[in-house]
Image (tube, rainbow, N blue to C red; front, side, top):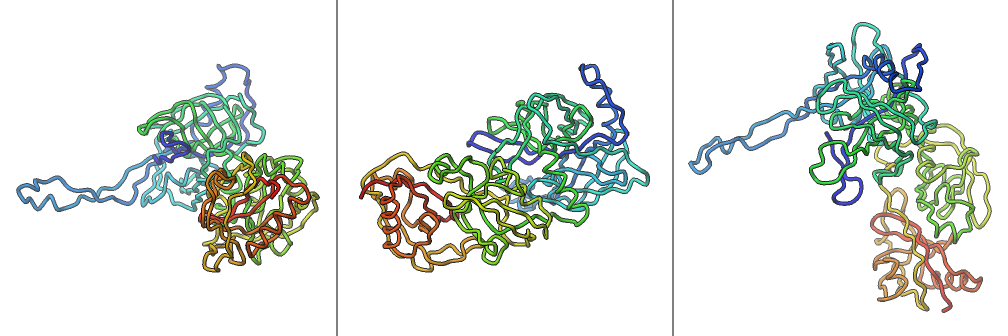
Length: 475
């Protein structure tokens, strides 16, 4: 069972699971009492499967008496890794959903049902973010299956049921409630996890989280606990929402891979400081930090510093929701983005493209924007020089061009307080590109003249470009 760090050094997350919904034709149930739980669970058990895999072998030193020069001590034993997880059937012809990490590196995958039937499964497709995989078995007969529900309809406090294969104990059922929604655990820029206290453990990965209608509303994915040896549920489980998983599964089923929508910009969270300096009505959406030349965003005139405040007429609640909406849009679809620039917003229409192999991962870790508004001093503490072309970080979102290098940072200055380091490049002051220290000083003077107390500055570090809020004073 895969373990991944989510936050501090002593906080570990055990990767676990996947999402679905009730079998077509199931009768409505009285959901008012806990006595109805057996009636809800019973028809679901036959569609939840246990997954057992053999993964590529690892070499380990064989035992031997090296002191006596025993040649066996120099030999290695090749041992396959045996792992297990959970999954659920989504069609009567044998498509099964689980987590990617459950079947990663597997050369043999077998699926067993609650009635004891066992089948060999083929891996149809896998996807890294969200952590999902699609399997296929040939049972020779129609299979019971479950369907995805609407995870957007979930409410905190709603009862939920997890079914899976914890510690290899098949068809285990636990119940709890939705503890929180839209959880960001700092794994990707599209985090949107359902948090539940329904007990899930090692082996629940890929298993379904059901609502009381028997619909899969989450895919069990991770547990959250303390200590390096975390081995069981601490009442903090996370599941991939059904609505985030449905489109990925359908893409894998019909095309063998995820065709994510691509517009060609990188965006950061809008902090309270950025909201204040730009005069934004809310923190919805995201601020553009990089543009891919020739991509739809560049062709439509979007530039660094623009704020995407709406997508097809809807205000995304945060930058993660914006990225999910864009990624889930089919390539070739025309969309309208509401773009805020210089105190006003305007609609921008563009056609979504398709992510190609080897390009930037839209769900990959990104550097959180710094909330830099604490200290104000007469001198910002920056020593500047024109940046040599070789200093630019050549990447998809930073294709070279003019910049100004920060070659020194004065102690006890605002720049020091903001944790700006020598070697950082300044790309823009507000919406304007800068190519020399004179450009930077000119833009700062213009901002001071109009009475600005703070200014947005696009900088580039080894982690890529991001916006900072720089306090200003009279020079």
